[in-house]
Amino acid sequence: MRKRIWGWFFFDWASQPYNTLLITFIFAPYVKELIGDGAQAQTAWGFGIGAAGIIIALLAPVLGAISDVSGNRMRWIWVFSLLYVAGAWMLWYAAPGSFNLPLTLLFFAIGMIGMEFATIFTNSMLPDLGTKEEIGRISGNGWAFGYLGGLVSLVIMLTLLAENAETGKTLIGISPILGLDPETREGTRAVGPLTALWYAVFMVPFFLFVKDPKPHKARKGAVKDALSHLGGTIRDLPRTPSLFAYLGSSMLYRDALNGLYFFGGIYASGVLGWSVTHIGIFGIIAIVSGAIFAVIGGRADQHFGPKPVIRACILILAAVALVTITISPTSLLFIPLPEGSVLPDITFFLIGAVIGAAGGVIQSASRTMMVRQAIPGHMTEAFGLYALAGKATSFIAPILIGITTAISHSQQIGIIPLVFLFLIGWALLRWVKPEGDTHP
Image 1 (tube, rainbow, N blue to C red):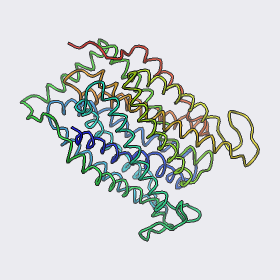
Image 2: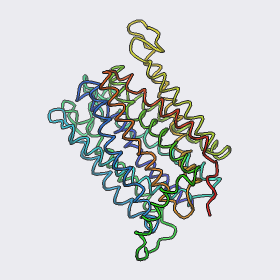
Image 3: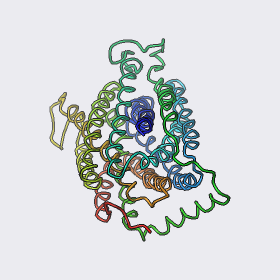
Image 4: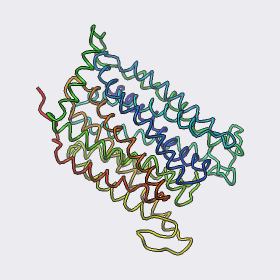
């Protein structure tokens, strides 16, 4: 069991760089540099991620239902791991002289779809790793381990590969290693192959130590029955008010959190003028904070249960989003600042630490809450619905940000929708029972 738990942890370690390096701290700001205009980049990024979210939302519950009767989740993880690796690797071709935005967003979406679908099946294995009381701590430790993987990969990128656009040097003042050409941004573009190789190497312990507990051959007609059960589950959601409320709540607050992740790097680059290197330091602070608090949050989850932990984190993140809106190079909380003030930069670094801390805790507690809300015997289907909830509005938030930014021509005004998503998600938790609905 100990080996299986550590093997399960390694999925978080292996997959985290897609979030850390590509979605938030390295590749997204690099895309902004290539496009040139922060508002235009934020708009394009919003539409691209939103399109991937639609695909994930439509297919996630179906795949989860099929997996519950097929009895072999590992096969699905292999398939989607290939998408992850292929999509990440192809980002190498986002070169300054031949940058193709639609094609880049397509490859990014392929990798993101692979990551999200693989996560559905690995999350559904959580109940197999311990008792109901233990899984909160296990989930928190896994999330912390994943953050550590993201941190190590980010440090490698910043110190050895990602060059400053102006100096051509990395964070420690050297040219990118392996003879990569800073003029064509090969060091920064290497983030794609690095993310792909990182995943391929560190998934080895997962595949060695994690096994499906009871693999079995699906009976004839089982897939049809699974899809029928999924349809019944969706139709009957109003009859399971706790599950219904939780899916609705998590749909909104997780979407808002992803908005902070997806647009944090582009926001810092466009509003504060940060370089990829500065955004990387911001990322290190956020990840260290996230790793520490994921462990603490896992203990709080085990002691108090996931619901109060989630509610507290939502309020913290909503406050962070509000403060972020007021940050500019010349003002903070709508108070004018002298030219050249470092206060906006310091505040944004602190915001990164809070987002990392609250974000890690809420994501860890959310998946343990899903275990408590799931219908017994249909865990992967439940996490398919959980992914649907996470993606059903995942195209709405980025698209709202894209539309709001396009209309206002302001990156600050553009993230206002996130505040409302957090607050509505917090309100819906009122109807969520800590132990879920009573199932027959």
